[in-house]
Image 1: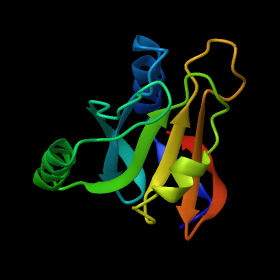
Image 2: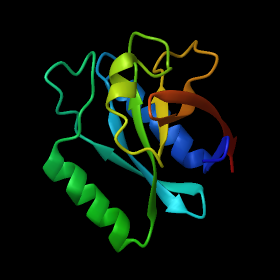
Image 3: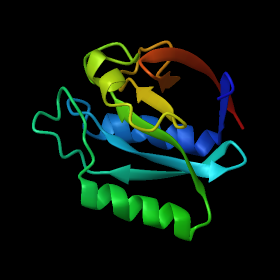
Length: 136
């Protein structure tokens, strides 16, 4: 995976907006596009037992979102979630549950005073590399 990820500005704004809708719970969803450019966000319901500290997309919803991505002839390029009360870098749980090594993992901070409200990472075999987000 390259050290950069491209995303449309309106999609980046939607991620921040989604995280701020329920700032005490982790939001989550999938990101899709073509040719390495993220052009669509598919928000999901956080089905985790404790949504203030974790996120989980129920398998049925995950499969439905992936079907929508394929039907639109897009590629799964990223997965996003928020960290309501922690720094927006991968937690031990995020690293452990990074089941899609080809995807970029976007972590959003809902706070208005955060210097970098959205950060992206490659997580492969427990190794984390921060990706430069190029807004298009």
